[in-house]
Image: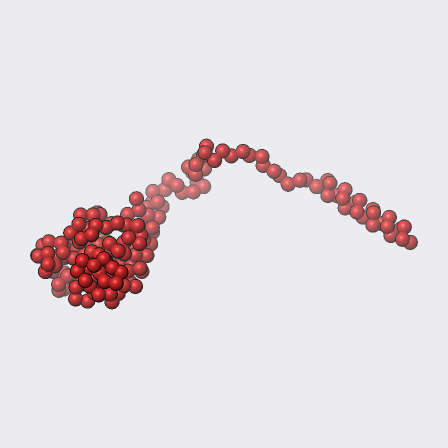
Length: 199
């Protein structure tokens, strides 16, 4: 009985092994890729939309919007900090000290004074404002028509064109302000610059 049982086990093992021997082995690709000889642009053009300018532009817009949102989020933690002329933070700020401090977190270096920051970036109109843009105003210290104050746009109402900016105000410290305000900031607005770019 034991011999018959052992013979049956031996037959089952032999049949099982023979069945596996006849199966097709998995396909093995023997490709030697020299990583210095190709780039992503060598892939088929329709694999990724690399050459679609509309998609590229949308991606740049999304990137700039994200950078602006990140800066605005970082800036919000300083609301309520006191204003101090000549201060660059983080406990107290003047207006340009605040903008240069918050933009530095995104790797964007701004000049030290509002007047110098006004020489940076691309000029944009009030109608073209978007989050991340810098707005410039005259101040009692600078005199009418001369840059003396800077703020950063954090939100734009696309229907009305009105915006909200964050700044270090001499009277309120770091705070939010609506624009236009039919008052001080509307009267003293000089211009706006875009310093966030995808390039």
